[in-house]
Length: 233
Image (cartoon, rainbow, N blue to C red; front, side, top):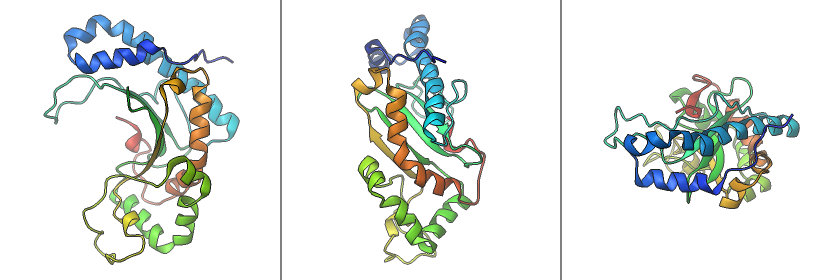
């Protein structure tokens, strides 16, 4: 069954550029239908196409046109920046089953288009489980992180880090940089041409393929929080 995704239009990128320059309701509200036609509806169609691609290629992630896309509206309750709208669109693709917030992510923003994923802002229990795995199963962790396909696709894992090593771990641990991580995430850039193409679902699926072993490792860590985790805004 066709999902109807034919790529984003150049006008979609232009809309986000204009939104960044005019981030207020007076500008957005008369253009809401334009936003929906250029960005919201194509993103939903992309998610439908991605779900089919994931299943066809055996990638254990889920893409749901109703649940995967992030809202355009910012939560400004606790922010000094009261701009009402995000200047990007994105969607999350959770690990099938109880992945505890682990999954993939697509981000579309002029000048910053990428696909990635991992474990974002995990619970203290899951972060402790990650650190235990780093020191207790070094061969397994490095077997995933140092795999040629993962390194070629994403380089190294990244994320916010503690200024020093976590309590209880020696500062000279050979994996101190992994232990300092507060998130375990990865990403790779996409081009404008990628997102304008009808085969974007295949591009995203192929990009995430080398990350499946890492996502499987992260999803298997104990201490799961809500399955939504970092994958919801």
